[in-house]
Length: 180
Image (cartoon, rainbow, N blue to C red; front, side):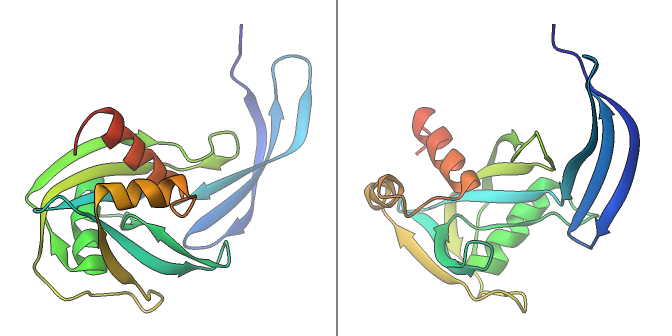
């Protein structure tokens, strides 16, 4: 039977506003002790699968420095300390795209990499989105908003042009559950 590990000691080796790195000493409960098991604590975020009134998906194009490339993905943003995941999703959709919706459906909470990363992201489907505002971007954001048909998104996904985990999971959940 699989057993939970026991943390013997824990030391924070990096602490920034968005990321904390811990170095844990753990007892695997099978006779083995690991002296340097690193855990990355990253803020949670919300990702939105936004569908316009005429059945198009809203995606954003932006440069992502971690991968050093321009990506296509669904809008998303970090959850502020005083916000729920849904409020964050509603705020981020409007800030990043100018669209808003009154028709929200939660699609679940998911862990990005549970072996070494302590965080999760929340997925939401927003239907009947309408353009209601101008974009209100953060200083570090340069986002181009695109609307694509379901067929165009599927082609982008199959060609590997939609490659981030949360957009991929959102697309697949909506497809398999027939939510479009």
